Image (cartoon, rainbow over all chains, first blue to last red; front, side, top):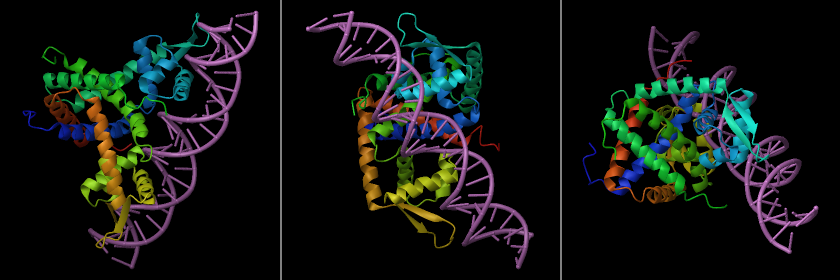
Length: 155
Length: 155
DNA sequence: CGATTCGGTTGTATAGTACAACGGTCAGGT
DNA sequence: ACCTGACCGTTGTACTATACAACCGAATCG
């Protein structure tokens, strides 16, 4: 498979569109089932906070194309669950720097582990090479779409 | 790029996990912006109805892992918008066979076109070969996950 | 025929999200 | 030094998508 340069761009785009959408549809459902205790979005934001080691709510909003009110509430939830901490920035009293708490880091680690296991299960029969290439494509796709959005215009 | 068999499975899985999730997060947002008139889920279901040319609500639910109540309401919405028609099945009075209306087919076509355009824009600098391979990987991934879900167990 | 299963609807609850209006805080220009 | 505007975040409100449970009517099987 994937042998050909004979597949027209349009057909591939159509498949990509459909499959990415299908994935998105299912992602929420399974995420909710795998981690009922940690809502999907919170999980994602927590992961981002963890990786960034100190980011602002506005950054999260920009990164995920979310409204700041949404982020505000999500962060509030995470704080209520004791998973993140807000520290006022010393130099700018408007911003809050977000950090995962101990508990947050733990929850995140365990969620990541079990999620990784689910993916491993699902992709068990893929070769390491295919996995690497698929990952590369996804990265490339997402990177492209963040920097060049057709809909970040005012509305 | 993507040259190596040296990338460990785990690293790739991690990237795939993260990037697919990130994608899912963004998908909704942009979909809503591109087609404010046609809610994302309705669009997906409508597309499925169109391709299948006469399917039942239960089929949709099974295919997308949705509760039948969800599908019921989505279909009701589509009907209210005049985009689908329900025809009682002659042989089984319980089922309703769903068909796109003229208007439904039109809306779908235009939505698909503009969505395709958005993808083309985003993936402008990908080679046809890369597109084909990416599409193939996505298909493979989604096929795998539908047939082998770890969470379709009772709960 | 009665019990069960199946397809679908409706009631209720929840997550996630957007938009708009607001309250503080900072930074520049006059 | 002030006002003005930009920026960060919260809160009010509304809507979509979704699930679960309870239900109704039709089919099917013993």
